[in-house]
Length: 384
Image 1 (tube, one colour):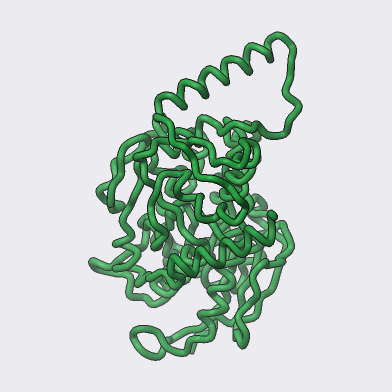
Image 2: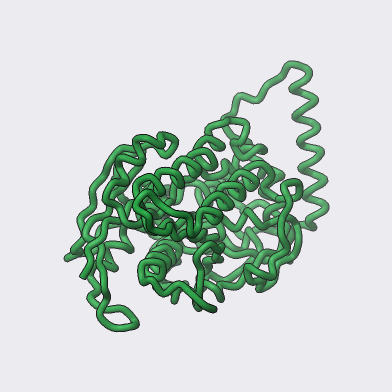
């Protein structure tokens, strides 16, 4: 049995630490669906600028070892050194959008440096180090452009343009990075082997380690007398996914591309793959309500999308006028939802995970009740 080293870039982060956890779980298995497996992970190399301190306990008896190494994804030379001996790379490195700022944090060039230039450095480092498999975490925001998506597969999703993406510059950066990874599929590495790549597109995630999605909605609710604000279109259902299930999809992609059987109708190499789970789709306030009940947060009284849009526009004009007069708002974050979040929650976005099921053999290991229980316990312990 071949023993392989897998590097998890961004392994100290929200998704990355759960990818490490699922890899440890996988190291306990001697067989797969086709019988005895031909390889197993002997070492998980966590590459991150932040020390590896997971908020989830590792499974007992795991056979793989976890080793943390400090590495900045923007430093291609350092990354090439740290990828020496690595067979597969799972990239979870990304700066998440700041849902408290209208520009989602993109006014700071750091997002582009990490989310695009860092990915470019990573691809070149993989080739230079002779890595065989690269699994990249993208985001469903790269295809959200205000067009209704209802059970769309990847091939039937209308192609986005750089001008109409709901999350604007943030989504454009992520889309460009995804393109870099997919175009690197089947390119030759320094060892003369072919690099196999795939990009996974999860929706917004929740669960242990989340500091951006549910916490931001909790902050907004607490700022509006413990009521979830009316955001988005009441009829615009969207998806979220438990971080543990998304992490498992990365392990499934690893199994598939390392198997050497990525061909014919079940091929996924060089392709984007939607990753969802059994979290019930809902409008944004309905999506977050189950996680906030333990905080005494009340459901939202949904207002028409156009009405909320108008109020946000007027509020923005009022703020701009006062700013021109020399008055500034010293608060770190507004108590009002940003317009980008309102547009995001105003688009019907429910995609199909058929490719993940058929090509990756992905099946969410955590049911909706299990995911809700685990996530709610984390949020309650962290933010009460």
